[in-house]
Length: 101
Image 1 (cartoon, rainbow, N blue to C red):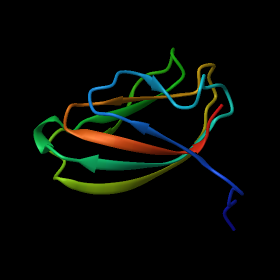
Image 2 (cartoon, rainbow, N blue to C red; image 1 turned 30 degrees about the vertical axis):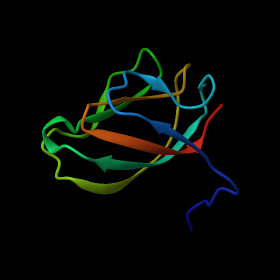
Image 3 (tube, one colour; image 1 turned 45 degrees about the horizontal axis):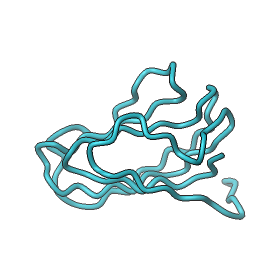
Image 4 (cartoon, rainbow, N blue to C red; image 1 turned 180 degrees about the vertical axis):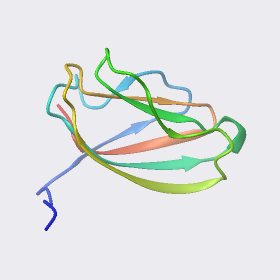
């Protein structure tokens, strides 16, 4: 049976952001449960996450993702200092759900 947290935080990430930290500071152990992505313009709808400032980018949605709303389960705990970082292209916004410090 999957663990269901008693509470979750959420943070919005506007279009055209680079390495926005989730939470006030972000830290090792932060949990990124889900990304809710709203694509407004397919041609510029890119999104990626990184685990800390030294981590490599992990692509989540590529450009040309059709207009719409997508819920993507991540379910991962940050292993790096700095917590989770989100980068968005000009064509989408993100609502990140998890437990962020």
